Length: 241
Image (tube, rainbow, N blue to C red):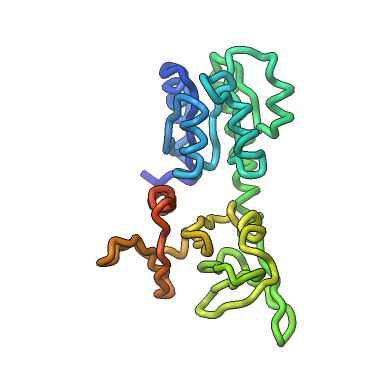
């Protein structure tokens, strides 16, 4: 059986509702369910841990509801969102929150199928954009175009970012935090306060004798993972496969 192309997170405080979405998704083998959450707090934690491509998000959950999840995370940092609810009065707010779709429970197979068609079209379009994305840096020989998919890792260098690709580095006059916002949807994850790593460049994770988790890149570079980022980073690498 071919591996799934995209990952999904299901968030609903009702087990039966989560099971229903999972059953509907079974008809779409290109999607794999990587997490299920019962409330908004679990969603916020799981978004960093598993980085899903889509979240099926219940509007009304205890504590932090679906809209609060997006507000706290910000729409720019959310994956594709499909809202789920037993009521239709939240539709306008859902689309104002930049949701892909809004499904009223119980969801029919035909209605779910229409949503999935839109979702696949959006994800494929985003993947094409990601392949085409590049960063332009200025060198002594002029401008150099660095395809994001070929960058191994990026480290902070005062007010600059040092970009490593194909064994060479380039300086870009842009703080790491600003550059992170540009590349975080392209598979880059924080390793520690001063480094971003492209997950596709990770060859293996290993432990040092000092008990430090290290990411070894294909180019042979070893980058330590900070203690507070270990779990999320390891989960992201596993998901990347």
